[in-house]
Length: 299
Figure 1 (cartoon, rainbow, N blue to C red):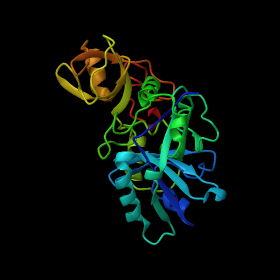
Figure 2 (figure 1 turned 180 degrees about the vertical axis):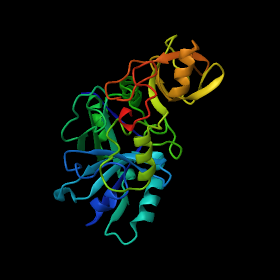
Figure 3 (figure 1 turned 135 degrees about the horizontal axis):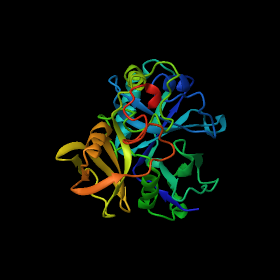
C-alpha cells in the first residue's frame, strides 16, 4: 500500500433530517445509491450548467452521526459552503466546514488503504484509482508514504481529469470534464440546478470540447495551462502533465480537421498526439468510426 495526503482538498459535512433530499435536489449525481460504504461523485452547477465545484459524497452511518461528507477542492470549499447556505432556505439541514480538522488520503498504486485510516471509500469514478479516505488530521502523517505528484501521475496515465488542473471551475460544463463518463451525472433522476442545460447537451450531442489524454512526441510535457494549437488556430488548453503525458481540454472537431489536413497539434509549442483512449471513455475520438455523430448516445 502506498498513500499520499492531498493537501488541496477540503471537507464539508451536510447533516439533518433533510440532508439527503437537500443534496438530491441540487447535485448532478443520484443520491439513492450513495449509502455507507458506497460513495458518489457529482457536482454543483450554475443555472447555466457550468461547474461550480465537483466532489465526492460519503454517507455516514447513524453511529457516525449520519448525514454526508463532501470531499471538495480546497479552493472551492468556501464558495461551495456559500452556495449551499443560499439554497438551504428552511430545510432541516446543518452545514459545517471540517477542513481544518480533516485530512484526505488517496491510494497512489491502487491498493486498498488501511481500514482504520478513517472514512475509507473506493474512488467512485474509476476502480483503478483505488481508495480514498477522510481522516482526522492528527497523526495522519504516519500513513503517508508518497508525494502527491505520484498520485497525479497515475491519475493522468489513467486519463481522469482534476478540477483546477485540467479544467476551470465556473467555465466548464460537466460533459467537458468527463463527468458523464465517470458516473458524475445522472440522466434519470429528477431536476437539479443546471439540469436542463446538461440534459440538452447530452441528447443533442453538442459536447465538442472534452478533456482527453495526450502524449508529447519528444517525451517532455509542457507546462500546465499552455495553449494547444494546430496550424496557428486554437484547440484548447493543456492541463496537468507527467512523464511526457498530459490531459488537455480540446475542441475535438477542430483537432479532427487538423489531423485530416496533416497538421500536427502543438501544446506550448511542443508536438503531441492523442494517447490511447481509456476504457471508460465511450465517445469516439477523431479518426474513429462514429466521430461527429450528434446523437446523445454517442456521447
